[in-house]
Image 1 (cartoon, rainbow, N blue to C red):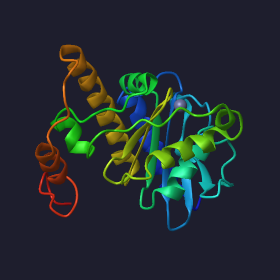
Image 2 (image 1 turned 90 degrees about the horizontal axis):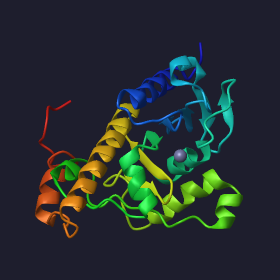
Image 3 (image 1 turned 90 degrees about the vertical axis):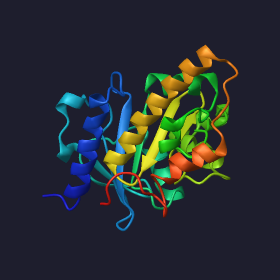
Length: 232
Ligand SMILES: [Zn+2]
Protein backbone atom coordinates (compact mmCIF):
# COMPACT_ATOMS: atom_id res chain seq x y z
CA UNK A 1 0.00 0.00 0.00
CA UNK A 2 1.37 3.39 -1.02
CA UNK A 3 2.16 6.03 1.65
CA UNK A 4 0.32 8.40 -0.64
CA UNK A 5 -2.92 6.44 -0.99
CA UNK A 6 -5.05 9.30 0.40
CA UNK A 7 -3.67 11.76 -2.17
CA UNK A 8 -3.99 9.21 -4.99
CA UNK A 9 -7.64 8.53 -4.09
CA UNK A 10 -8.55 12.24 -3.92
CA UNK A 11 -6.73 12.92 -7.19
CA UNK A 12 -8.35 9.96 -8.94
CA UNK A 13 -11.85 10.95 -7.83
CA UNK A 14 -11.29 14.58 -8.88
CA UNK A 15 -10.03 13.48 -12.32
CA UNK A 16 -13.19 11.39 -12.79
CA UNK A 17 -15.29 14.51 -12.19
CA UNK A 18 -13.86 16.08 -15.38
CA UNK A 19 -15.73 13.77 -17.80
CA UNK A 20 -18.75 13.77 -15.45
CA UNK A 21 -18.97 17.56 -15.73
CA UNK A 22 -18.23 17.30 -19.48
CA UNK A 23 -15.15 19.47 -19.12
CA UNK A 24 -12.88 17.43 -21.37
CA UNK A 25 -12.68 16.25 -24.93
CA UNK A 26 -10.34 13.35 -25.74
CA UNK A 27 -7.65 13.39 -23.02
CA UNK A 28 -7.23 17.19 -22.71
CA UNK A 29 -7.46 17.64 -18.96
CA UNK A 30 -5.82 16.82 -15.67
CA UNK A 31 -6.16 17.37 -11.96
CA UNK A 32 -3.45 17.31 -9.32
CA UNK A 33 -3.92 17.19 -5.54
CA UNK A 34 -1.10 18.36 -3.31
CA UNK A 35 0.01 17.94 0.27
CA UNK A 36 2.04 21.04 1.17
CA UNK A 37 3.15 19.47 4.49
CA UNK A 38 4.84 16.59 2.66
CA UNK A 39 5.83 18.77 -0.33
CA UNK A 40 4.29 16.39 -2.88
CA UNK A 41 1.34 16.20 -5.23
CA UNK A 42 -0.54 13.42 -7.02
CA UNK A 43 -1.28 13.90 -10.71
CA UNK A 44 -2.94 11.98 -13.52
CA UNK A 45 -0.60 9.92 -15.71
CA UNK A 46 0.00 11.13 -19.26
CA UNK A 47 -2.41 10.20 -22.05
CA UNK A 48 -4.26 7.38 -20.24
CA UNK A 49 -7.93 6.92 -21.14
CA UNK A 50 -10.27 7.94 -18.30
CA UNK A 51 -12.10 4.61 -18.46
CA UNK A 52 -8.85 2.74 -17.76
CA UNK A 53 -7.58 4.85 -14.84
CA UNK A 54 -7.29 3.64 -11.25
CA UNK A 55 -6.26 5.45 -8.05
CA UNK A 56 -2.97 3.50 -7.96
CA UNK A 57 -2.05 4.97 -11.39
CA UNK A 58 -1.83 8.52 -9.96
CA UNK A 59 1.83 9.57 -10.01
CA UNK A 60 3.37 11.25 -6.95
CA UNK A 61 5.73 14.13 -7.74
CA UNK A 62 7.52 16.39 -5.25
CA UNK A 63 7.39 20.21 -5.39
CA UNK A 64 10.81 20.17 -7.10
CA UNK A 65 9.43 18.03 -9.95
CA UNK A 66 10.98 14.68 -9.03
CA UNK A 67 8.80 11.55 -9.30
CA UNK A 68 8.72 9.95 -5.86
CA UNK A 69 6.14 7.21 -6.46
CA UNK A 70 4.50 5.55 -9.46
CA UNK A 71 5.45 3.61 -12.58
CA UNK A 72 3.64 5.65 -15.25
CA UNK A 73 4.80 8.96 -16.75
CA UNK A 74 2.98 11.91 -15.13
CA UNK A 75 0.88 14.31 -17.25
CA UNK A 76 2.99 16.42 -19.60
CA UNK A 77 1.52 19.50 -17.83
CA UNK A 78 3.15 18.46 -14.52
CA UNK A 79 5.73 21.33 -14.46
CA UNK A 80 2.86 23.88 -14.73
CA UNK A 81 1.12 22.31 -11.73
CA UNK A 82 4.44 22.20 -9.87
CA UNK A 83 5.06 25.91 -10.51
CA UNK A 84 1.59 26.83 -9.21
CA UNK A 85 1.99 24.73 -6.04
CA UNK A 86 5.30 26.53 -5.41
CA UNK A 87 3.98 30.04 -6.02
CA UNK A 88 0.41 29.98 -4.70
CA UNK A 89 0.90 29.01 -1.05
CA UNK A 90 -2.11 27.33 0.49
CA UNK A 91 -3.71 25.84 -2.62
CA UNK A 92 -4.24 22.06 -2.56
CA UNK A 93 -5.36 21.25 -6.08
CA UNK A 94 -4.80 22.42 -9.66
CA UNK A 95 -7.13 21.64 -12.57
CA UNK A 96 -6.41 22.11 -16.26
CA UNK A 97 -9.02 21.64 -18.97
CA UNK A 98 -9.69 22.68 -22.54
CA UNK A 99 -13.36 23.37 -21.78
CA UNK A 100 -14.70 25.02 -24.89
CA UNK A 101 -16.13 28.35 -23.78
CA UNK A 102 -13.22 29.17 -21.46
CA UNK A 103 -10.84 28.23 -24.30
CA UNK A 104 -12.73 30.57 -26.64
CA UNK A 105 -11.83 33.51 -24.35
CA UNK A 106 -8.22 32.27 -24.10
CA UNK A 107 -7.98 32.04 -27.88
CA UNK A 108 -9.47 35.51 -28.27
CA UNK A 109 -6.88 36.77 -25.78
CA UNK A 110 -9.60 38.14 -23.50
CA UNK A 111 -10.18 37.80 -19.78
CA UNK A 112 -13.70 36.95 -18.61
CA UNK A 113 -15.19 40.05 -16.96
CA UNK A 114 -17.57 39.62 -14.07
CA UNK A 115 -20.89 40.28 -15.80
CA UNK A 116 -23.19 38.75 -13.21
CA UNK A 117 -23.70 37.13 -9.83
CA UNK A 118 -22.94 33.56 -10.98
CA UNK A 119 -19.41 34.76 -11.74
CA UNK A 120 -19.22 36.81 -8.52
CA UNK A 121 -20.13 33.75 -6.45
CA UNK A 122 -16.89 32.07 -7.52
CA UNK A 123 -14.38 34.68 -8.74
CA UNK A 124 -13.73 38.07 -7.17
CA UNK A 125 -13.56 40.03 -10.42
CA UNK A 126 -12.30 39.33 -13.90
CA UNK A 127 -10.69 35.96 -14.64
CA UNK A 128 -7.51 37.22 -16.30
CA UNK A 129 -5.74 36.06 -19.43
CA UNK A 130 -1.94 35.78 -19.56
CA UNK A 131 0.25 37.46 -22.14
CA UNK A 132 1.14 35.32 -25.18
CA UNK A 133 4.19 33.16 -24.58
CA UNK A 134 7.38 33.99 -26.46
CA UNK A 135 9.01 31.64 -28.99
CA UNK A 136 11.85 31.06 -26.56
CA UNK A 137 9.46 30.15 -23.72
CA UNK A 138 7.60 27.73 -25.96
CA UNK A 139 10.75 26.14 -27.36
CA UNK A 140 12.60 25.64 -24.06
CA UNK A 141 10.81 24.52 -20.89
CA UNK A 142 7.30 25.06 -22.29
CA UNK A 143 5.16 23.65 -19.46
CA UNK A 144 7.32 25.25 -16.73
CA UNK A 145 7.19 28.60 -18.55
CA UNK A 146 3.40 28.24 -18.81
CA UNK A 147 3.44 28.25 -15.00
CA UNK A 148 5.70 31.29 -15.02
CA UNK A 149 3.40 33.38 -17.23
CA UNK A 150 0.52 32.55 -14.87
CA UNK A 151 2.56 33.58 -11.81
CA UNK A 152 3.62 36.76 -13.65
CA UNK A 153 -0.04 37.57 -14.39
CA UNK A 154 -0.86 37.24 -10.68
CA UNK A 155 1.88 39.65 -9.56
CA UNK A 156 -0.84 42.07 -8.38
CA UNK A 157 -3.69 39.60 -7.91
CA UNK A 158 -4.60 37.34 -4.99
CA UNK A 159 -4.85 33.71 -6.21
CA UNK A 160 -7.22 32.97 -3.32
CA UNK A 161 -9.69 35.61 -4.55
CA UNK A 162 -9.48 34.76 -8.25
CA UNK A 163 -8.82 31.02 -8.41
CA UNK A 164 -8.54 30.74 -12.21
CA UNK A 165 -6.60 32.04 -15.19
CA UNK A 166 -6.71 31.67 -18.95
CA UNK A 167 -3.39 30.94 -20.61
CA UNK A 168 -3.34 32.90 -23.87
CA UNK A 169 -4.16 30.77 -26.96
CA UNK A 170 -4.42 27.71 -24.71
CA UNK A 171 -6.98 27.41 -21.92
CA UNK A 172 -7.88 27.54 -18.25
CA UNK A 173 -5.97 26.57 -15.13
CA UNK A 174 -8.04 26.60 -11.94
CA UNK A 175 -7.05 25.86 -8.33
CA UNK A 176 -8.62 25.38 -4.94
CA UNK A 177 -8.54 23.93 -1.42
CA UNK A 178 -9.42 20.35 -2.51
CA UNK A 179 -9.65 18.33 -5.71
CA UNK A 180 -13.43 18.46 -5.61
CA UNK A 181 -13.56 22.22 -4.99
CA UNK A 182 -11.04 22.98 -7.74
CA UNK A 183 -13.01 20.93 -10.29
CA UNK A 184 -16.23 22.64 -9.16
CA UNK A 185 -14.58 26.01 -9.85
CA UNK A 186 -13.40 24.76 -13.27
CA UNK A 187 -17.01 23.84 -14.02
CA UNK A 188 -18.22 27.24 -12.76
CA UNK A 189 -15.62 28.91 -14.98
CA UNK A 190 -16.93 27.10 -18.04
CA UNK A 191 -20.50 28.11 -17.18
CA UNK A 192 -19.66 31.79 -16.65
CA UNK A 193 -17.60 31.82 -19.87
CA UNK A 194 -20.63 30.57 -21.80
CA UNK A 195 -22.91 33.11 -20.08
CA UNK A 196 -20.46 35.95 -20.76
CA UNK A 197 -20.18 35.03 -24.42
CA UNK A 198 -23.97 35.08 -24.81
CA UNK A 199 -24.22 38.38 -22.92
CA UNK A 200 -21.66 39.89 -25.33
CA UNK A 201 -23.71 38.62 -28.28
CA UNK A 202 -26.85 40.27 -26.94
CA UNK A 203 -25.10 43.48 -25.91
CA UNK A 204 -21.52 44.04 -27.14
CA UNK A 205 -21.21 46.96 -24.70
CA UNK A 206 -22.21 45.03 -21.57
CA UNK A 207 -20.26 46.21 -18.51
CA UNK A 208 -18.97 44.37 -15.42
CA UNK A 209 -21.23 44.34 -12.36
CA UNK A 210 -20.74 47.21 -9.91
CA UNK A 211 -18.37 46.70 -6.98
CA UNK A 212 -21.17 46.52 -4.39
CA UNK A 213 -22.80 43.56 -6.16
CA UNK A 214 -19.45 41.81 -6.67
CA UNK A 215 -18.62 42.32 -2.97
CA UNK A 216 -22.02 41.07 -1.82
CA UNK A 217 -21.97 37.85 -3.81
CA UNK A 218 -18.31 36.97 -3.35
CA UNK A 219 -18.09 37.83 0.33
CA UNK A 220 -21.27 36.05 1.40
CA UNK A 221 -19.64 32.79 0.21
CA UNK A 222 -15.93 33.42 0.97
CA UNK A 223 -13.84 34.73 3.85
CA UNK A 224 -14.53 35.82 7.41
CA UNK A 225 -17.98 37.30 6.75
CA UNK A 226 -19.39 34.39 4.71
CA UNK A 227 -22.91 33.32 5.61
CA UNK A 228 -24.14 31.40 2.52
CA UNK A 229 -24.88 27.66 2.86
CA UNK A 230 -24.36 25.41 5.89
CA UNK A 231 -21.46 25.68 8.33
CA UNK A 232 -19.13 22.69 7.91
ZN1 LIG B 1 -3.65 22.15 -22.25
